[in-house]
Length: 419
Ligand code: ADP
Ligand code: MG
Image 1 (cartoon, rainbow, N blue to C red):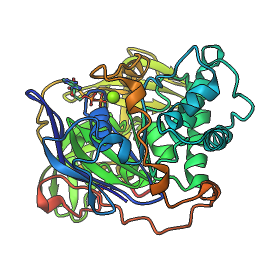
Image 2: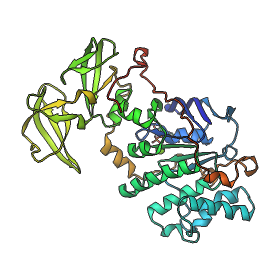
Image 3: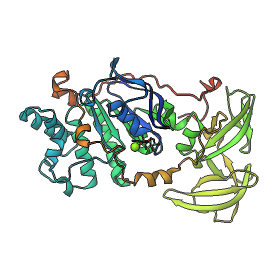
Image 4: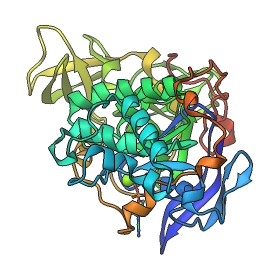
């Protein structure tokens, strides 16, 4: 089991990772999700031992790994840009770390074949990496990090550079692979779909700090903070006041059982907003965007913040039309009032997509060849080859720790819609 405790990494004045607590149980997949620059890669590098934390600890099964060099941690790290050798063939790429470990040739052949089979690339051994498709290269990189049989597999934006269709397919495959092989996985991404589809638990990272940790459905339906809510697509946010279990504001009454009286923020996805004659919000359509199964309307509301509504059907209003809207109270999340600690816009989905298409670079130019294959020595590994094909036991997941805002009054509020 991996335990990260109070981990802090600074680069000069930049606090890239800020007192992070996080655990990954054996056989569990945990995803750290956050926008570009929030410290995801630095967190992985600190766990791998490639950067030294300023404070805090990384433990494996209670053992403090401070002073344990990367290649003795038994962790595999797949870098964001895959960092394959384009002129070598698939086998040479996959076997690279095993050769660095000076394993016997038979063992290298066995493990390489095993890793390639796991990612569905059996028979690709002698294909040149430069001639493979993006999806195939991604699999080769995955096979390379699997071949040394790491006790912890870490993936940095594993599907970030692939096109949408391929990403969606490989998302399903990754999940299947993790479950089938019972892998213990820590991966990071800015992509919500990837995080929620693949992970057993999701941690939202903001400016180096863990904002919320929980099971995917819990975090998705009950973001604990305004940052988490906005990041997860709750684009509509407004002020309201709670009195006796009801929040009242521009959206009309919203149930807020167990929420203390006083100011709150309400958040809702565009899908929670509908056209409604006589609804509490009236305004004019500012923009109208086709989004596959709906039109996304942005409505300038009289005396209020603009509201986004996902509208389906035949009669979708046009730009300039006057509309009235209602927000489904059951789909509203009640959040504590909070002032964002750092200025600057929170990236929306489109920003994030743009970020995802930017090729990632290594942060400090460190030689990949020495760092991607961090692997525990073969002799130290208790599991044999058969462990790769064992079925994941239906282990009870650790109880999700829905991290609450720092105001303790909010710690256990059952706010928001139910999954
Ligand atoms: P992410 O992977 O979430 O995009 P990073 O971990 O790469 O975030 O970066 C977190 C912060 O640390 C950013 O502000 C980034 O500019 C900074 N940073 C990352 N690596 C270095 C480095 N080697 N030197 C200085 N600053 C760095
Ligand atoms: Mg990164």
